[in-house]
Picture 1: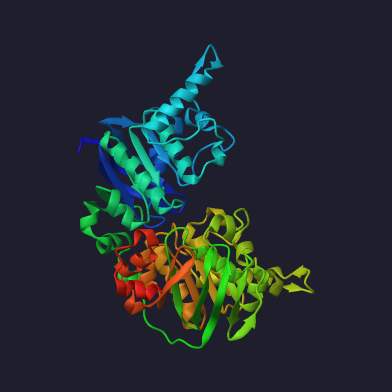
Picture 2: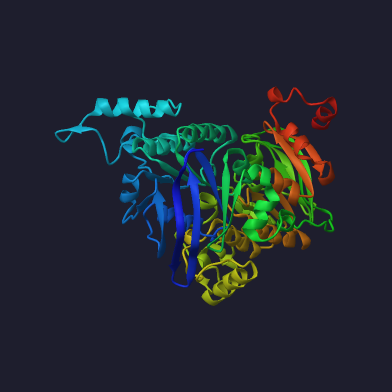
Length: 511
C-alpha cells in the first residue's frame, strides 16, 4: 500500500431539518480499493458530492497528498484529479465515444479540432483498459458495460488520482462485473485511490481492501480486510442488527395453489415450464443472467405472448394475453427496472400509488374522487413507511427502497392473488431490504402467492419457502428450502458446458 493520499477530516454537512454528515474522518490509501458502506440516507452520496465539488461541507476539510482542497464546482474537483463515476453515467448520448472521452479538453490547433489525434488518443486510452470500442460510435449505441468503460477512460484522460464508483455494477451481468473488477485492480496497481460504493456484499469481499461504514451521517468504524470481517459484522455495523434479523424468515401456513403453470413456453423460456405457487408461499426463482427468469414472469403477466401452456389462478383456468388481463385476475408484477417500467418518474407519489387503482376512485369511469385517492395514498405511505416529504413529491427523488414500496402500494389497492417480484431489492440498502421483506411476508401471511426472482443467492435462500432453479431457458430443479444450499443451487444454475463436474445425484435432480 502507498501512503495515505486522500484524507477526510471532521466533515459535516446539514440540509434543512437533516444532519447528513457529522464529524466524519477517515483516510484512503493510494493503491487500494476502499468501500463506503451504509443504508440509504447514511451519508454516502453526500460525502461523494462533497468530494466531487457539487456540495461544500459546513465544517471540516479533506486533503489530497496532504494538500487541503477547496472546491467551488465539479470542474475544480476534476482539475484536482478527482472523478466520481455515478450510477447514472455522465455521458452525452448523441456524441461519439471520442468526443465524450475528451469533452472539455478536445485536441485542437488554432481553434480547429484535430480529429485524427482525437481518434488516436481515444484508441490508446481505451486500449489501456483492454477495450476495443469504435471511437466514432455514438455513445447511446453502446451497451451499459462499454459506456461505463468510456466513463472510466474519461477519468483517466484527465489524469484522475481519485476515482469513486457509485453502485457501478447495478446494470451489469456477471462477466461484465468481472471485467470491471479487472480494470479496478489495474487502477489499484497503478496507485490510484479507489472509493467503492455498493450494496452487494459479495462485491465488497471480492474487490475491497478496507470498508468504512456510515450510519445516520456518522462514521461507525473502518474495517481492514472486509472479507475476513464477514457479512454479519458489516451488516450489524450498518443497521444495528444482524443479517438473520434482516431476513426474519419464519414458516407460515400454506393453502391451495394460488398459481398453477403448465407447459408454459415463449420467448426466453425454451423448455415447457410447469410449477405451482401455493397461497401463503414464497417461491424463489434463481438463475444466471440469460437463464430466462424475467422472461418467465413476463409470460405469466402477459407482457410477452406465450406460444403454449396453461395458467390457473385459484384453481380457475385463466387466459392472460396482456397485463390488463393479469391484473383483472389478481396477478400483478413489480418489474426489474423500476425507473423504466415500474414508476412514472416525474409524477407524484400519490399518482404513482394510485396508477392502477384509479378506476376504483372514479364515478362513472370519468370523474376522479380526489379525496379518496389522497386517503388511499396516505394510508399506504403510513402502513408501508414510505419516506417522502409529501404525497405531491415527485417519486424520482425518493430512494430506490421507497420507490419499490410505492410500487407495492399500488398493487395493494388491487385484490392481489399472485405477486410477481423481479429483483425487488436491487440497488436497495440492507435496512430497506428488511422492510421490503416484511411487506412480502405480510402479504404471504394473508394468503397471497409470491413468485420472487432474484440474482442474490442470500436473498433467495433467506426469504423463500421453495426455489426454482433456471438454466438456459429451462427450470432444472424445484428445491425445498431445506434442500437448497449455495453450492447446490449454483451448480444447478451453471450452464451445462460449465457444469461437467456435477455429481450424478445432482444431475438427477435436474432431469
